[in-house]
Length: 114
Length: 114
Image (cartoon, rainbow over all chains, first blue to last red; front, side, top):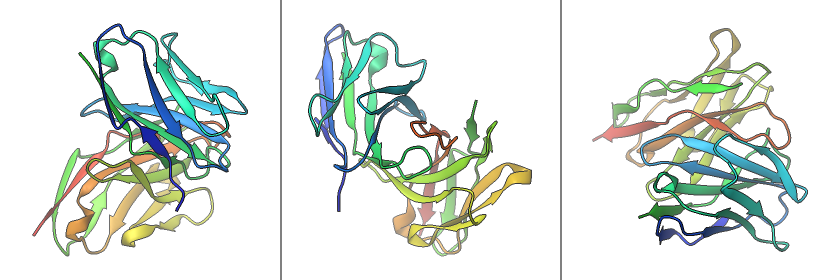
């Protein structure tokens, strides 16, 4: 069964460092998303990506964040200068036809900023 | 703007008893509604979705949900709880636009008592 895969599963980084979280969406999907879940809080939408560009982004997705699809399979989230409050579980998701269809989620990357 | 309210951060039921997890939404457009389940250390898995077809939606693992526009609700039910149902459950809403992200509720932790 096709699945969304994320690497690494856990990343620890020092405050101020850049991190790149990686995702391989399901191969025939067209829409890609990043969400985050701070411990004990709800899952929050960060950004959606379609046709090689950002389609929508939330107020959380400020200039410190960027996304890229560097090749035909990977979808990355970069945080330029991490802050303590960036510590969270980050989920990648993909869907075939967008908002009214099922989004398939990866298992997440737990980012810990120290 | 959209929002989701899940009443009860924790719900405890006995094995074999009815499961009822409450979800109310707010949306300025006809909504698409989803229930996702998250097992420990795993990603989010779709249980069921409402996309303007039948108001009673059946999902996986014996769960179902009924869309009630007049009550702006989309409560999740299961007639008989099983120990394996213990997990975190998230209700989510989307406007259905192509690249729209999901707006999640805070989640309900379902505890099954033996």
